[in-house]
Amino acid sequence: MGGAVSAGEDNDDLIDNLKEAQYIRTERVEQAFRAIDRGDYYLEGYRDNAYKDLAWKHGNIHLSAPCIYSEVMEALKLQPGLSFLNLGSGTGYLSTMVGLILGPFGVNHGIELHSDVVDYAKEKLESFIKNSDSFDKFEFCEPAFVVGNCLQIASDSHQYDRIYCGAGVQKDHENYMKILLKVGGILVMPIEDQLTQIMRTGQNTWESKNILAVSFAPLVQPSKNDNGKPDSVGLPPCAVRNLQDLARIYIRRTLRNFINDEMQAKGIPQRAPPKRKRKRVKQRINTYVFVGNQLIPQPLDSEEDERMEEDNKEEEEKDHSDALKPEEPPQNLLREKIMKLPLPESLKAYLTYFRDK
Image (cartoon, rainbow, N blue to C red; front, side, top):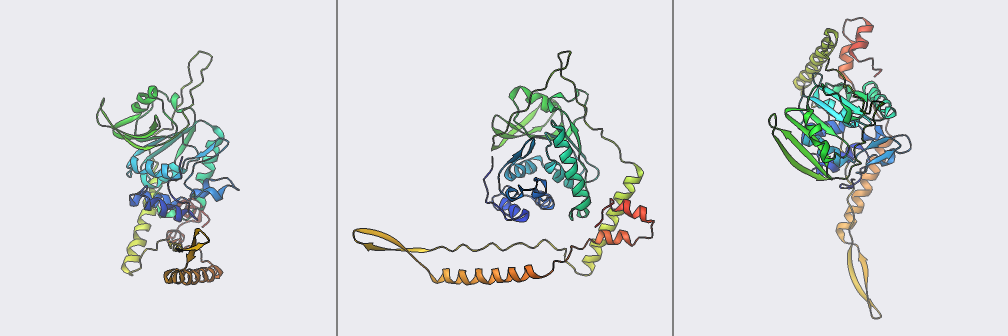
């Protein structure tokens, strides 16, 4: 499934294409997509396909097409502080983007059938926290993943504000999914080849809307134990943050607000990532000439074509010149403020989440 938008050269280019095609429609979703490089979730040797609007699968590792994730993120209508459950959390790509919107006081849980995929998701999550330039620009709700079949969730599990299921749901499992949702919540899942948004409007009332025609592999049926019944799976607890963690959140928030106020007072705009200019496509005007009894089209360059050629050549020369300049590492103002605080080094490391940059 996918192929609805043009391939991009990099993550930003892909997001530009998704915006242009109206798959990404809100600023909050756009920021989350730009902050998480889709290519980082591909295995080495496969990254060239990361910015195409196509699903990707290797063994148990799977990523849906970018257009699908865009529609899911928009349909979930995420807000800070909500609880989210990802049924079939896979690589953690979607859960990590969701965590950037939920913020530190949300709940972000995922359940995945394959243990090797959960290990892969945890590895990618750790890499994002330790290495991504985006991490310090957001308040983050870190996902917690468990191994298990999402059709075996314990009956006494808590309910969630937002739920996404990343596998095809059979009609007889629809009510099972709905029970996991709080009143006022939103569930997005594929049912009968339609990506569907379901809103719980009351204890026993629902509203549903088809979003997009899709094709998903069906949910795997649970295996039974020796007693002839499937084992239940416990979801992560909704733990209250400890005082130390709360202090880190508020210190980082205060410093981030101070930096923003300082930049505004100096009239320094917050820098957005540079957008690549799209290369203008040369189009030819055809004229036709008779050769014997046949009418043969002959390409004819227009004056506009010649101007395009000159403009493209100038842009390529400029890009080549810029590529030769040494690239400056992005400035992390939050980290700089933390490192200047009169605190022990161990506490500074804690405040930076033990990041090296």
